[in-house]
Image (tube, rainbow, N blue to C red):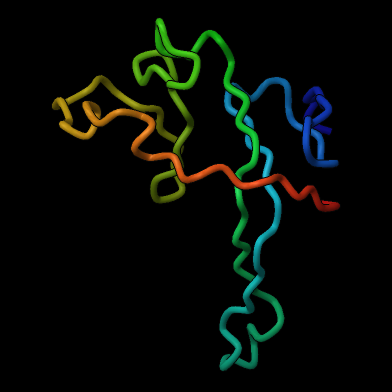
Length: 117
């Protein structure tokens, strides 16, 4: 209905959206019921914990010289703030976190276990 283009995923059955510059493939790790003590909400709210097993990033928003980093000056994600949509503005202040090597954030590799989504 939205006119978006589906693309096959590599590791899960759910398709991706070609028009999205960042696409995540994930498997369900856990689902947890929420608000179980509220009779009006019991059984209606669920928190899903997923594990990202594959990331797809459009080359146009990658940082020059890196295959695994997004350039924040090139990517302008849409953000909802108090029911209004906003994009990102210019960088306001340098962050020392940006100096930490990317590898320090990565967990040890785990084997993929695709599940039906």
